[in-house]
Image: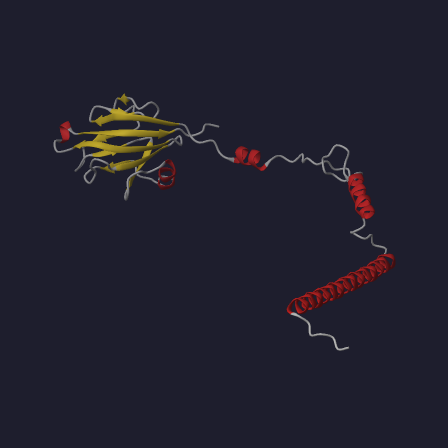
Length: 240
């Protein structure tokens, strides 16, 4: 007897059943693929492990991945370190500290001591007074180190104990400048015709003292009343 045609409900049930069967088949296939992949990975890892074991046994070198090798390496490093933690190798006969003097100590010992400096403001020299480099005080013309004279055509500074060098250029001469420029100076006098306020004059005493004379006021229009007022800086020579 022929089967009556399926109704709408029957067709829906058949489609749902077919869909469920297809989904189940897909899940089974996916599971099989995943299982195959894991089996393949395990096989490859096993082959790599055997290859590594073979290479390690052939070379005699511990495997870094082996925890036992790491532990033995750390123990060996601890055994090589000195007991006091100084970082010196055992039995080497050297310690972690050096007995050599530090470079800073050597540099400090090698540096020369800076000369003593003295400053005197407003010292004045004229026909009746000279100035001493030892204390910056006025002396009789024959007793001081820097004197003043207008006996010649023009007024000038003069000295029996020191030599003079006038400094040119930017103001601010230093001890090193004066020491350098007076090293071979021979003149015991310095004309004042071109000198003015701010003129710098380096002086070297025969005992090694270096001085800088900075003119503040110069009056030479009337030689009998002429004078020079200046600021004086003296660097004492180191006495042996």
